[in-house]
Image (cartoon, rainbow, N blue to C red; front, side, top):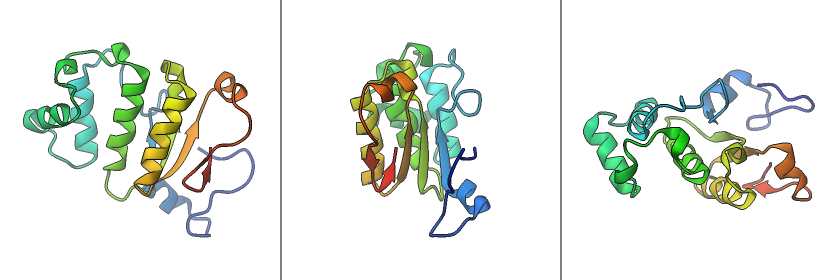
Length: 154
């Protein structure tokens, strides 16, 4: 992903290699979005594995229990609320080794509201992440100006 204008700097320097190492893309269509027919337990297992955390049955069960999602384990991703989907994928991305920045891609395409998406981004920023929250044009047009999240314009 390259900006149409401007530059993206890491600690004041242009360093695309480091930028790729420290940035996690979250739910980008046709890049890293989960297959809609997968059950939650499979997506959680994959995300745990990417984060280099225990990703077997017990690791998945523990994560689901910790997030009050036991009853959703067999629910297909396409049937989860947009809010839960983006909360889950964003949080799991923050656990990946070396990640300092997130690009959260259009959670409003699944019905997540502006306020819900902003709350998720602010929570990640509060944990020390730089966050770029990308929203669809209709959502952006319904809110004036830029939103600042942890020092990063979204």
